[in-house]
Length: 194
Image 1 (cartoon, rainbow, N blue to C red):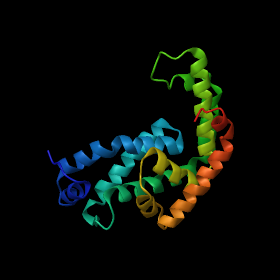
Image 2: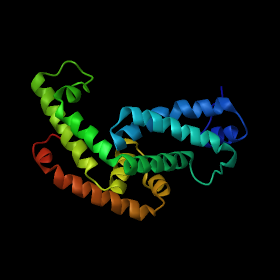
Image 3: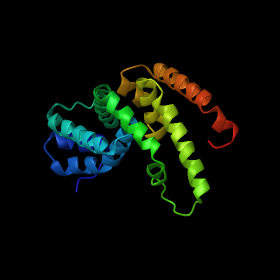
Image 4: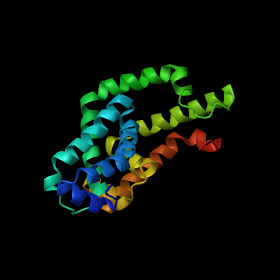
């Protein structure tokens, strides 16, 4: 089995090593699915788009040039797919999100720990819904930057490469996004729930 840095693996993939591609796929499949789920709030679409990312990587493997980190290239592909899906499915995503929020069972089903009381679960579900709505209400680029930074743990430099902007533009984008979130989530901040 091929082990190594992302760059080494991708260079092996470019040379035709399928085992190295499998390592990259296992390493980044779940982060890609999580990224798409946060961006699109649609599990099935997230799975499909994560698969599409790796399909595109494999198809373009012979043209790969290590000009940036592999993860920057990976998230750039994912970002483009996510933004296209948002544009193509804006109404569908809003309807799915609204119907998901209307059913208390779907919110409560997300809890892994079966120990919390019903009241604790309702409070937690309401808190998550408010945070999700606040993040979803951000403009696409701000939402994307927040998801990459906060949930995918991507640094400023990589986000800049993914979005095709400067690091200072990313910092500005995140500052505006976090400021908007702070204002929208003020009641939760006051109550110490965040």
